[in-house]
Image 1 (tube, each protein chain N blue to C red):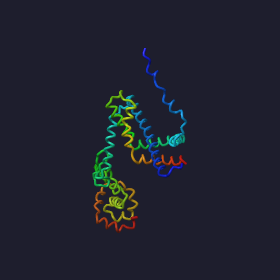
Image 2: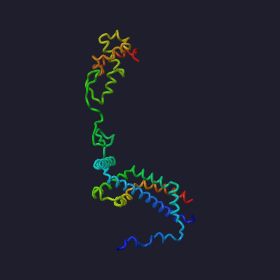
Image 3: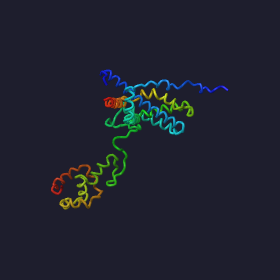
Image 4: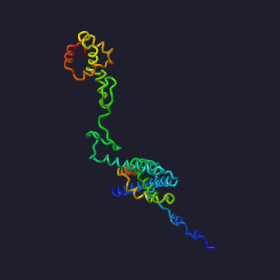
Length: 114
Length: 178
């Protein structure tokens, strides 16, 4: 009987890569602070609210619905939907919303780096 | 951090962008997963209605943004968001219960003021109808008889013409008028 291909799989990359001790980068440190202080959560809620208010979420939902209509309800995966929305979604965020969020992030970075 | 300022700033803005895109991506995944769920569970039965709503709201937005459109102060024909126009004065006609004249709905309140007694003319209208030919007798008591004759209809019509002879009468009556 042919052995299953999974048995001959090469070793997990993680084992090889993470052996040397690496100092966390500045970015990683900030990221940790971002999450730990709850700032990431707050900003995510703020962004969500702004995007709903300006109709961005409705536009994305309309895109999804159009795609589902075209492809047929049972053939759609979350992955496909993400790929459908992402380019348009990133591009159609209103400038004011983007500016507000970037401002808040920068403020946080300044206070966190001190 | 002992990094020079410019480098710090640009890497800082890079970092902010990175975080922002990170947040945005998470939200995009959330929206996609929500839509996926709705699609799979068949909860999107109201599909066509929402499309209609979106179209209507887009149309309304265009109409609002268009500077060539007449707004509220611009003439009689204002178009509201459903595309209907209303004349600035309500023009349904009906009969006044006090004086039995046909009145336009938009002019009803001022008419009632005159007709039922807010103003000077209306009060005089009442006293005149009560006095009739007996001007001399009722002059002194015109104020007191006012309350008794508030519903007197018959000669009210004549007053609205601004009868000059009556004005003369009223002038000599000045003392009893507040």
